[in-house]
Amino acid sequence: MPTHGSLTKAGKVRAQTPKIEPTPKTRLAPKRKTRSNFTKRIVHAPRDERGGRGGRGGGQRF
Image (cartoon, rainbow, N blue to C red; front, side, top):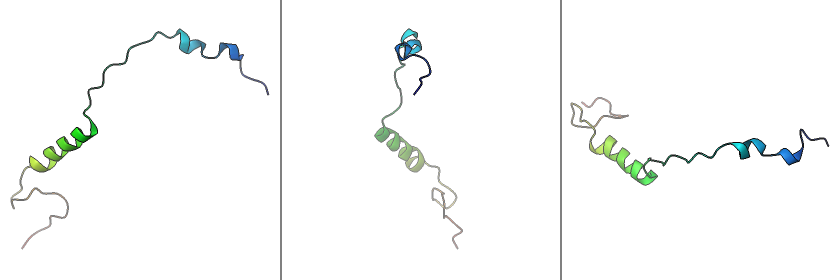
């Protein structure tokens, strides 16, 4: 079975590429992100004219 190029040259380009240090991640941990979403959506949500916080299924009340 023929190969495309010799195996002695495998990884040549990657080995020649200069190493760049990764930038540090600044994202929140998943638990903290969920908590901040809850606070933003539920706790600090603006109230509508009926005193509720809107959302789906909040049809007319008579």
